[in-house]
Length: 266
Image 1 (cartoon, rainbow, N blue to C red):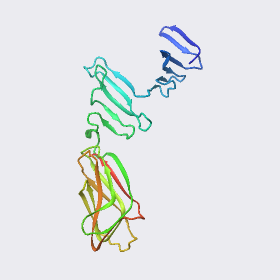
Image 2: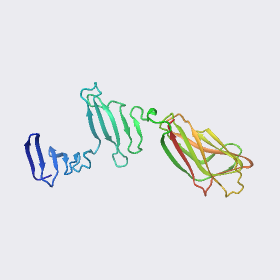
Image 3: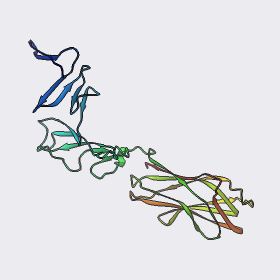
Image 4: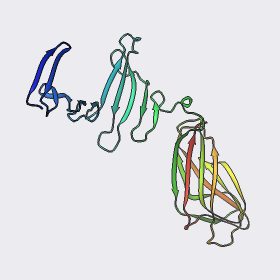
């Protein structure tokens, strides 16, 4: 704190200033509550403000903005930064309505989760479908699929280790599943997509005969699904072969396999 404070009356009020080398700090109960640094930045809860107004707290930090003439229990809005304690979780930012007793109006406002960057309404903890333009990508998930499957079956058989879990944000969304893997059928075959144990898409690969056990050509297949849920689901890959011993080879140790899941607003 500056060693010298100059105070004077002017036509516009009382002016207080430290010496030219210091910053101005205001205290109550021998504790600094507000700081104005030499650049004009104002800090509350910090004596090293980084912006024109810098509010901080070790737990949660709040700001109230209101119109006193507005409707009952609808006058005040609260900006809240909360969570993130312990250093492992990022804080979240909430804009919410307060009642006339300055208590939270349950379900009001919106929250941005600092860890997941998910925007949600506080009413249902989900994105409002009406606020998301059709065709917008809501989220994307990429999963590396390890290993490979080999077998012989003319009937449907699930491919071990070729699955991923996914949680849609909107029940109205379309989900695009993009699979990239090595595929070797002797002679012909199909690869299907299951959602929670039931086949939702089934694609025939046609004449994809590969007699060479080491030749697993890389293939990409797209599956468009409408899960109609916001619960966590499991997408599983499987397939079948027809003729020539019904041989199935999927994934391949020398190919990179992956499943990309993209949620698209419908």
